[in-house]
Image (cartoon, rainbow, N blue to C red; front, side, top):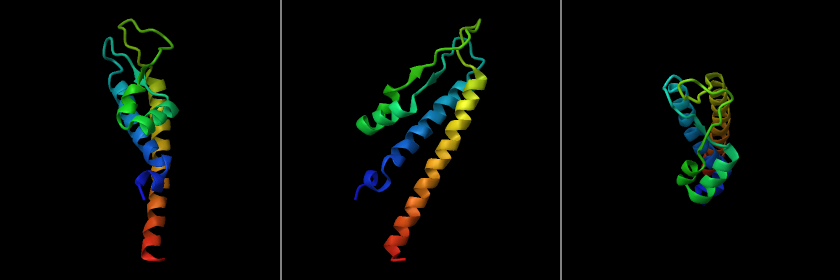
Length: 114
């Protein structure tokens, strides 16, 4: 049985959430870098792309974020927006990870005959 059937969409979701976390962290780290352009993904589009094309699908779904307010130095990072997105993504990542851990525990118990 392949891992995609054991874990369903959750394995791909964990991968997308992990990669998105890195993208959001980069935005936060570059909040004061002149001309830095914030990037993000739509989770559902990125998930579909990863399921269809594999890991390269995430890169194809990255888009530049349209700033709510322009900056004098050309930076498009809105720090509060990035921090909120990062926190929400971290909670969703943890939820997905908890589900997968539960699934792994079920499989382990089944293999042991418990």
